[in-house]
Image (tube, rainbow, N blue to C red):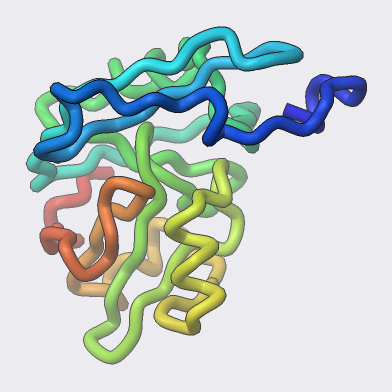
Length: 171
């Protein structure tokens, strides 16, 4: 908030987030929308998507360093997925993210995440800080080095992820 609204006063989310009784059992996403102040807090039941296939889509101008309520550019790219479950975005020749998550690839010994993601991601940053994943530039041609991939984000921890065979990534 302070990045976009430099005059905004720091806030405590604890003052704004009241978990409704109906959202206290199960898994829910909490979405905080703000301008210069918090404008809404919404809860939504969360069910992870089952992703088996990814379609590489290229966009050299996309920028998504912060989460936005307006996901028009990501949704437009996602429309290019064809019969695949999800997209994997390539920017300037390097793999970045899917439309809703960061990605990690396994070479069988370690997990590697793209070094230039569109969104740094809280789970990605946390796993890097712990040393559980490392960064590398990953080009589409490099995918043959990694038999499996997993999607990660705040709702998809690495250890709970489902493997996606990189042979199921369509060029």
